Amino acid sequence: MHAISRRGCLLLAPPALLGALGLGALWPHASRGAERTLAWYQDAAPPRVTLRLPEQPVRGIITIGIDVADEHDWVIESVDLDGIALLPAAGEHDVDTAALPDGTHVVTVRARDRSSAANGALVQGTFVSRNSGLRLELEPQSNQVGQGQTLVVRIRTDVPAQVQGTLDGSPLWFVADGLLNWSLAGFDAMTKPGQRRLAILATDDLGNRTEATFDIVVTPVRYPNEEIWLPPSTSGLIGSNVNAQEIARLDRLFAGVSPTKRWHGVFQVPVPNPIVSDFATGRSYNGGPITSRHWGTDFDSPIGTPVIAPAPGVVALAETLAVRGMAVILDHGLGVFTCYYHLSRTDVRVGQEVQRGDRLGLSGATGAVTGPHLHWELRVRGEAVDPMAWTRQTVP
Ligand SMILES: [Zn+2]
Image (cartoon, rainbow, N blue to C red; front, side, top):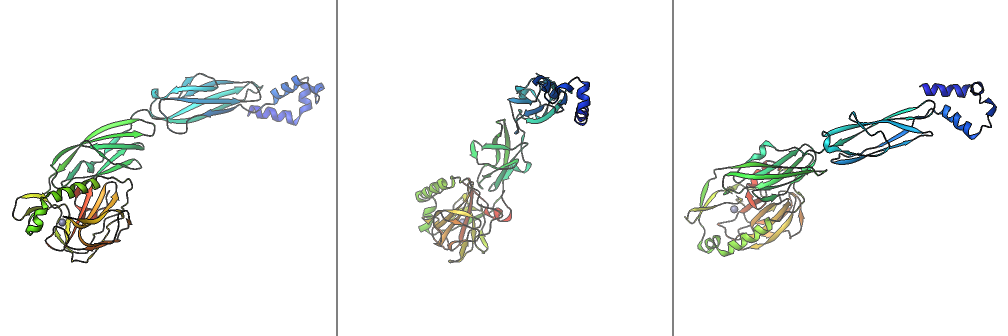
């Protein structure tokens, strides 16, 4: 304000003031020196200080830039960071942010020109540093799963992070959703109850890393048992080499993880018929011991019943298999597959995209069966889980 009022005087009454200063005789044909002197008096503009600070959060050593411009000489009176004095100079300043607490920091620069008014400038700017590892936690509902169920592993971080992880050493596929990263793991009905080890590595956009391990508990689930009586012609197939080869081939298919999540919302049941054999029912074939469990849900489906896609996906298999009969398998992404076996007809081909409700084919009685039905199976990372659970609740 002081500088502005002085300038005001000069503009309002230049002759009188110039006279008083002994410069009247030089006006308006003033010499260079006098012009400079006049400017020295008239300067009311403070130095223009530009502070160059990182716009994104930073870690480690960073450079703070200070530029000053003025018609006259100027001086930087002080540079401070969170109240700590730095060298009072323009140019580049290296600052090790690892020595600072994480968070927002304030840089203040005071400069002054060397005009008669000694116009001052104060410029402040902020930047954010983060050097300590990010915090991560496993959401409470993610630490337990029953046999035959789907586990949604939810990892929450305090800053956006890329999350990688393994479950008992086998890699999980994580999907980022803001501060949440989730992954799916399937546990088949015959998996051993007990603890599993979840190992997580989270990396933020600055490269800060945090590792953590968690215990996940698989709890026992009681499933019913049933006896299946197959004619000798098909019963031989169940424990055969043909079935082993078929299983090995399907396992390779289920191991593929396509990176796009295609499904959304709850799954629709593939046929409108009643269930005749539940998921995970223990099976004794032709009076033998219970050596396996049902990897799917069977619907009492008359031959020719339209079978529809429960959710969007891509056809991964559409052909006739020895044991599973005419089959369609859909890839829903992220290691989630659904299977439709014993069909009498298929209406889709491999690679075709399907939407919820699209017809995949007609139910039938092909392969090793006791009668017409639809066998529906859902695989998560290769493990058969209860498909009906996906029709009741949106996953994740
Ligand atoms: Zn079945």
